[in-house]
Length: 442
Ligand SMILES: Cc1cc2nc3c(=O)[nH]c(=O)nc-3n(C[C@H](O)[C@H](O)[C@H](O)COP(=O)(O)OP(=O)(O)OC[C@H]3O[C@@H](n4cnc5c(N)ncnc54)[C@H](O)[C@@H]3O)c2cc1C
Image (tube, rainbow, N blue to C red; front, side, top):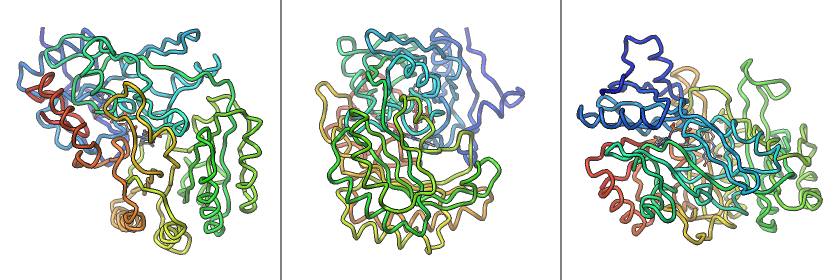
C-alpha cells in the first residue's frame, strides 16, 4: 500500500517542513510523519517505487546541507517516540524522534548521565549518527561509540537491528558516518553512572575578555580529562526571548563540567574564579540534568548562520588574533564565538569504535550569528570569516555535526575511513535512496 504523504494542500505542511534554522526553506516532494517502524518501511518502499529519495529528519538542526529536496520525501521522525532506561544495566533505548531533553531528567533521577550535547532540543539520532560531542567528551569520547545497537529500515524497506554481531559493517558506519545508510527507528546506548557533577558558567564583563580567555587557555593545559570546558564570547541579542539580566549584554564566559569527584572540582575551578569579577557564577554541585541548558542554546527555531573548525593546540597569540577579529572593540555582533576544549579521550580510538573514532586537534571552534533581517547576513558572514581566519593557522579539520553547510566530507574522514564508508554505502544503498546532510556516496 502506498504510504500517505502530506502535500502543500495539508494544513500541517508548513509546520512539518520547518527546520530549526528559520532561513532554511525546505520544499520536499512530500512529507511523511510515520508513527512506527512498519510505517517507515512503507514510506521507504513507496518512495523507491516512485523514483523519489528519502531524507530522515528529526528537528532539522542540520537541514541546510540537504540542499534541494524537490525529488525527496522528507521523513520527519517526531512520531517515533519511546524512552526506556534500564538503570541496572546503565542503558537507554530511545525511538528515533526522541530529543536529549526527553532523556536527561529521567536518567539523572536514576543517578545516570548521558553523552548529550549542549542543546536539549537536538535529536538523539542525528546527533549520535554524526558523532556526538558532549560535555563529558574529554573523559568519555564521542557518543556514537557508546551505542550498543541501532534499529533501522534499509533501502529495501527491511527492518534490521544492527550491533556488534549483526551487520557489523553497517553498525560501524552508522556510528559517526551519518544518515546515509538507512532510516534509524531506534537506538540503544550506554549511560554513565554519575549522580553528581560540578558544573556551571562564569560570565565576566566583556571588557575583561583578554584576561579571561588567556587565563582559561593557560588553565586548560593542566586539566585532568574529567574536566571539559568552554571559553566563549557572547553578545546576547536585545530581544524579549532572552531573559534579564543578560538581555542585550556582552560577556566573556567560561563553562566548566567536571565529572570526577565533585569535591575536587571546586579546587580545580578556583583559578578561573580569580580571572575577574564575574557578574554571574552558576558553578556548583548538581545532578547531571542541571546542565541541560548551561550553554544557553536557543530553545526555539531561530534564523542564523555559523562557522566551525577543529584546531590543534592554540598558542596565546591565537587568542589575541581571535579577540582582534571578533572580540570587544571589533564591532562583532556574533551571538557566540566559542572554543570547546577537546583532546583527552577524543584523541584515542576506543576498541571496536565506529566510523568516527576520534576527533583530531585540541579545540573545537564554533561561531554563530543571528540573522533576524536579511541585511544582517552580510556583516555576520564577515565576522564569521574573520573568526575562522584567526584560527585557520591551527586548522585540524572539521567535525561532522558542527558543519552546517554543504561540505566535502574528505575533510571530515581519513581516506581509509571514507573508503570503507563508501563500500558500506554501495552494499546497503547502491541506488543512493537516502538523502542526508553530509552524504557518503558509493
Ligand atoms: C543549537 C545547536 C547546538 C548543538 N550542540 C551540539 C553539541 O553540543 N554537540 C554535537 O555533537 N552537536 C551539536 N549540534 C549539532 C547537532 O548534533 C547536529 O545538528 C545534528 O545533526 C542534529 O541532529 P538532529 O536529528 O536534531 O537534526 P536533523 O537536521 O533532523 O538531522 C540531521 C541529519 O541526521 C540524520 N538523521 C537524523 N535522524 C535520522 C534518522 N532517524 N535516521 C537516519 N538519519 C537521521 C540525517 O542525515 C539528517 O540530515 C548542535 C546544533 C545546534 C543547532
